[in-house]
Each structure stands twice: as C-alpha cells, then as structure tokens.
Amino acid sequence: MVYYNQNGRAYNLDEKSFKGGGEGNVYDVIGQPSLVAKIYHANMLDAQITAKILAYADFFKSWDSNFRLYTVPPIEPLFDSNRKFAGYIMGKLVGDYVPLSSIYDADVGKDISYKNKIITAGNMCVITKLAHDNGVVIGDYNQKNIGVDPTGKVHLFDNDSFQFKANGKTHRCVVGVPEEMAPEIHKALKKEKADLKSVSAPVYNKYTDLYTMALHIFHLLMNGAHPFNSRIEASKLPPSQTVSSATISLLEASQKAIFIFAHPTVFRKPPKWAPAYEILSPELRNCFERAFVDGLNHPEKRPTPDEFYSALYRYSQELIEYPCGHFHHKSYTGSCEWCRISKK
Image (spheres, rainbow, N blue to C red):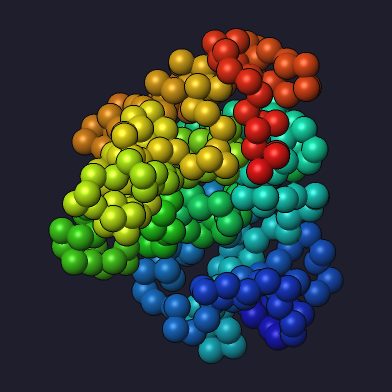
C-alpha cells in the first residue's frame, strides 16, 4: 500500500497491519523500521479529525524532549493517491512494555514489589505534569493507552486523541472509557443528551486528567480496585432492600461521590480482594478524598501531579517491612493485608 505526505513523498506500507482498533489500523513502513503508519477506517474520517492531524504536525514540534521520550505523536499526515486524508506517520515504539492494567492486580511480592507499584504511580504523576506543561490535555487517559517499561516509566500511546489548542482552535478529544471519565464529563453529556463528539464545548481539561490520574494511582496501590468498587453485606440490609436494589454501578457511585473505601456504611463495604484502605498514609488518603469526593463539585480541589508525587514519595519512605516480607505504612497497625489477600 502506498500513501503520501503533503509534499508528495511516498510511504510504502506493509499490506498486513500489526495492530487494529476502532479508529483504524497500524502498519509497518517498509524500509523505515523506526516508523509506523496509522490508517483510519473510512467511516472514522471527517473534517474534525483531518484538521486535528494537520495541526498536530506543527504542534508536537513545540514539545520538550522529555515529553517526546514517552509519547508517539503524529509526525506528519498521510494522503491516498487521490490526495484524500487517510492517516498519519508516527514513531515506532521500541522496548519492553507491559499494559498498565497488567500491573494493577499483579501479585505483590511474587510478580511485582509494592514499592515498584509506587514508583509506577509516581511516574503517572510525571507524565501527567509533562503533558500539561506541553499544552496537552490527555483526555482519553485510559489504561489501554498506557504502557510501563521495566523501570516503571510510563509511556502514552494513541496520542492522536490528545486535546490541544493551535492557532486559536481547540482540537478536541472525542473518545473515552466511561468508567475512567471524570463525573463532570458524564454530567455535561447527560445535560445536552450528547456524546463526546457532538457535545457543544470541550469536556476534557486538566482537572479531568487529574481525576483519571488519581484513579490509576488508586488501582496501582489497592490491588486493582476501582475507587468506587463496593460490596453488599446482605445480612445487614434493612428489610426494605435487597442486594439487587442496594447495588450501585461504578458510574453511579462516581457521580454521587459514594467513596466506600473512605466512607463505608452499615451494609456497603469495600471489596474483600482489596487491601484495607488504612494501609495508605493519611496524606494519600486525603489526596484520594480530594480527587473523588471534594472534586465532584469542585474539580480544582483535585491534587496536582506535584502534590500526588510528593505524597507518594513520602509514603514510600514511611513503609515498614512485615516479617512476611510485605510492606505497609507505619500508621497501619493490623496484620498483613497482602497475606490475607493471597490466601483467598
């Protein structure tokens, strides 16, 4: 397959894609092993995505070298033989990466150390700050777009979904995973009865990124638990309720700030496969409270990357080792939570 850049330079693409998705397929560039090309599905092409990728080619040049190390932005747009926009060229990721989601509930002590999870959490703060410092709103900050290298550094994939402003125009992020989106996004979409593409104004911003950053950090520290996971203790339900009627979805809990880890009720508790919330330092628990409860009506109260990074660093320095070899914060006085979980 042959596609062309704006100057008419030809790129020969492998006939078989090595990665596919809802938006398009990714192909190797023949003779240029450091490059790959993303070609959009025909039904995904519109004026909005075309304008965005055309603007991206200049925008990414303003990024600092640190941010470029951990991203794979569109380098230049590609056109078919009829000069119709089709996709773009980007750098090829080289290295050993695992999906962030595979680390969430990895066996602590067997597959990964808890301290390494904290390092990865800290690097979530680093990449979020780098994005914002370079004029990027990550937007679709979902776990499938995040890779982690052996040192715990975080890399962001599918950068064409980034939101940015160029020449006075905001090029929006129009995709996202509902369970990982800040509650104010759902509120805006519901109010207009719209989706991410048709809503009247951009719904992603740095505060929505801070929400999802906090969510990923929570996943990492709490054995893969979502902050709005909960379970029902049927024996403690009032007669008027059943388990079915008392159960709430992640989306409903997030939109009502029902953060059971911090505020359990008589019959609604955190899941048993998650460690006790008290293994976290008081400072980290305060960060999560700000992110998931205070931030519901005041998104600006969510911790910044610097605040979260500092809390994580102090947490790592205040861990104590139990006789079993696992680590808990010095303020925690219970038995080993990781041993309890591993026995289930």
